[in-house]
Image 1 (tube, helix red, strand yellow):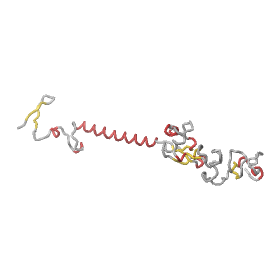
Image 2 (cartoon, rainbow, N blue to C red):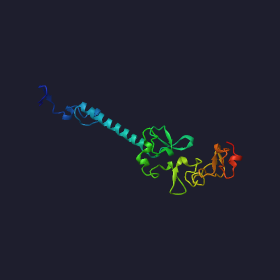
Image 3 (cartoon, rainbow, N blue to C red):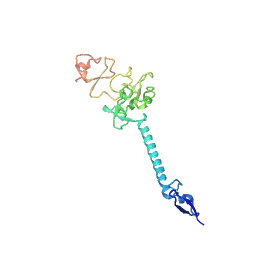
Length: 206
């Protein structure tokens, strides 16, 4: 025996007791992934919302990963150790990280998480520890020919492990505190003593 129930337009429609209410409403179909939901349009809306939420979540996760100030080493100019910016193209020298100036486009080289407790907040690859544990320099200041540690431990000895003086340098015992075991050839024969032996004035050529 069939029963009837009223519709919005005032008509009546036969109700088949053999069909469930969900079948009557067009739910629980394969395209709804076997989820009983309101009419088809609402089901599609729910699926779109779920997909949008997944995409947004993935974008946020990737964004956080790109902006994380962790390991992002690179090789800057002059073969210096560098820090890779968020754009994955710009590589700045280690000594430009946390120097008070935003050298990356988005300023990620000056983040509080990166610069809040120097040098402990910096990734290890950006830091060189001098022989005096109270002092440290940036990694690209090791073996740059200049006495940045103050005791030449960034230029000489087993900690620094620097190669011999390059072609732009003259090997000698410097007079000035600024240099350790090499002086720039640009200073040779300039009328000023830079080496203890005066070799920069008599033997070295610029």
